Amino acid sequence: MTLVAGVDSSTQSCKVVVRDLETGAVVRTGRASHPDGTSVDPQAWWDALVTAIADAGGLADVAAVSIGGQQHGMVALDAEGYVVRDALLWNDTRSSGAAADLISEFGADALAARTGLVPVASFTSTKLRWLRDAEPENAASVAAVALPHDWLTWRLRGFGPEDQSPLGPVLEELTTDRSDVSGTGYWNPATGEYDRDLLIAALGHDAVVPRVLGAGERAGTGIVDTAAADGSLLADVVVGPGAGDNAAAGLGLGAVSGDVVVSLGTSGTVFAVTERTSEDPSGIVAGFASASGEYLPLVCTLNAARVLDAFARVLGVDHDELGRLALEAQPGAGGAVLVPYFEGERTPNLPDATATLFGLTLLSTTRENLARAAVEGMLCALADGVEAILAQGVEARRLLLVGGAAQNPAVQAIAAQVFGVPVEIPTPGEYVAAGAAVQAAWALTGARPEWPIEVVAAPPVDHRPLILERYRVAAGTYSA
Ligand SMILES: Nc1ncnc2c1ncn2[C@@H]1O[C@H](COP(=O)(O)OP(=O)(O)O)[C@@H](O)[C@H]1O
Ligand SMILES: O=C(CO)[C@@H](O)[C@H](O)COP(=O)(O)O
Image (tube, rainbow, N blue to C red; front, side, top):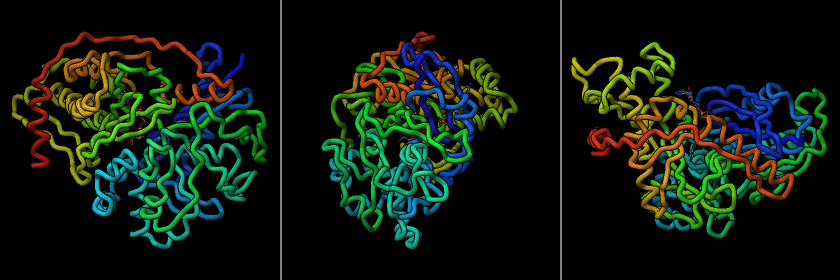
């Protein structure tokens, strides 16, 4: 049996899935946690990757591997290959002022046309501008800029600082892919080229940026044997291009025209695979590229699964019980409305906002209504995203619900009430890692594998417009 491996280095954890090349069947899995926080030493991701690989039984018998990862994080390297400072993650909002500065210097319309994006704090270019202004000494020492999956791929291939890697700090060996580079703010999805002027405007000087690989292209051959202490290499393992996690999930799901994916992980995202680039000067829809050669218009919120984590904690229950409580309440949660901007928010662009519970009365303040308000608030925050994606001309025959929180039956049922589109739940699984495994197989054989995806639930459409109407009134008070 030929085996391939896919990795999802996401915000909260690292997951490794080993699959049978022929059938796509999952053979082994491994997992390790990432530290909390929005500013993280990338070494923690490497340590988690090593642990997750060991947990998955190692990669010694695997023919190919590819790494999907959280998007946008700024991994700044000096000329010796050391990280200059902790990486600022996609959900770190300190660069919101830098985003506003870039917009006022270049204009939202021009930036949307040049990069597919209007800057918000999530995007890498704003983090570089923040570094230039807040930490000029660190900025001056930056020799290369990479994304989380680029850096992990480079390290796994054996590159890195002299004292930490067998092959040393060869910055020119950094690679990325179309999907992840499209979230930097200095790459043009229409031309497929870096926009060097924007990179220089952000960082203050030029730097090495990773070579951009196409779908199915190899980053190289040979990986570090993470089970060996001496840095020896597994010389024959093919390394795929890797991807941003959302694009990898799209690939893992085999998303095609008519599919809109809603992912409920740390972030909430809504996206579709399209033939054409998208340009949204309002900045709501990011015009990313897909991991399979097309495009990936995407809307992202900062507050998704962890909204439910917080309410489960406060109510002293686990996720299953939170779901049971939520389903015992009526749609609309007795008037309780949660606007869940716990981490600030990106869509709408309110980086300093906090969450608010509206509409509480003595009668409505029950555990059931609070649980339901949490689920409704998390989903309603994404409803505008679904509308914005459809406004880009995307057709939605069904919404595919994935990510940690999508496993919750209450989330599935309430999604069918909030979104006006049929909802389907694919077999529970790690779809980012699945997409990365697809890339590994593609890079190994030269052909995209066709592994089956099954839908295990399709809650009947039960549209309750009242839920979203009330939410919009409450959320509207933020921008008033
Ligand atoms: N049954 C469940 N109900 C609600 N939330 C869940 C459930 N299972 C996992 N989660 C939450 O999903 C999140 C992890 O999802 P995941 O898609 O792996 O996130 P990420 O990719 O951002 O790390 C965690 O916040 C976890 O608590
Ligand atoms: O910033 C975005 C998309 O633009 C996020 O979707 C990140 O890519 C993090 O993903 P998760 O860890 O939530 O899967």
